[in-house]
Amino acid sequence: MATKNLTAEPQRDFTKGECPEVLKNKRLSIENHQICIVKADLGPPNPKMPEVMFWLVKSAKWNVSEHAAREMVCGNCGHYWKTKFIDDCMKQYEQITPPEVDPSWVDTGESGGYCDEWDIPCTHSRTCNSWEPGGPITDAKGRNLLEYEEEDEEDEDESE
Image (cartoon, rainbow, N blue to C red; front, side):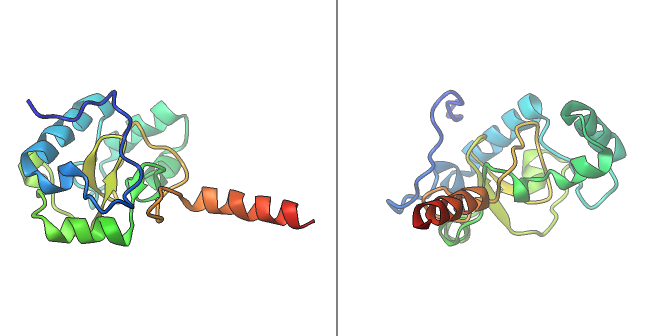
């Protein structure tokens, strides 16, 4: 089985111009999605529906309100890459559809990004137990909005 070695350091620098293998390999993408569904409770299957039980489980896991849990999605996760390069990679290669991952999954029609934690292309409105603040990563060197803010603060400190 050619699934990602989940103990390996994720690829975080795409400046060499190589698309993540999972964006080029549908079989690998499906396998990694299925691993993420089992190990990190990736979902919900249909982000356009209330999916109340899914979000109540997440809110209990993260010790936040259901409303807060619904805001903790891939699109603002610190593992979520949304760069021009990743967008170009996703357009260059045929991507999986949610029903290929699981027949109960609904295609939201949203553009996606890349998750470096689980090595999967992902829809911004889903989430998993690995969610971390600070995303999306919008810079080819793997910096996110929080890191840009830290750099700005460091620059201000040095200029004083």
